[in-house]
Image (cartoon, rainbow, N blue to C red; front, side, top):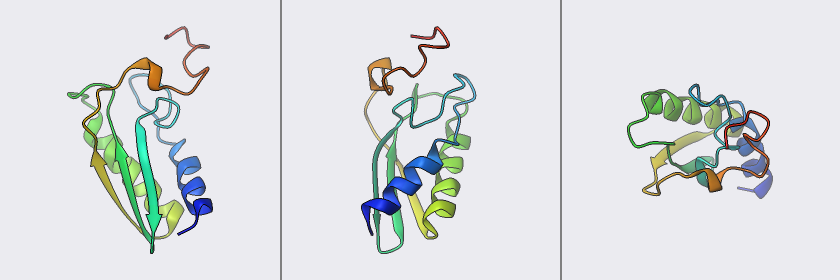
Length: 99
């Protein structure tokens, strides 16, 4: 679909919060790729740690949020990159004294 739909989905994903850190998945840089085509959204995301206890719940929340925002179906894949703080949006976490 259009880049506009991708922007809408990405903005909606700002409502998905990592419960351990208290920042959203977009700020944290966990959303590594997002494509919307023919009513189907494909998201590649990573977790802050491979054994994140909230991982399954966050993945499902990302899928549901993207479904609602796009009006279509969503597939979420887990990427193989290891997360590090440099992936965060500029200024994210600074107010919290996290990084």
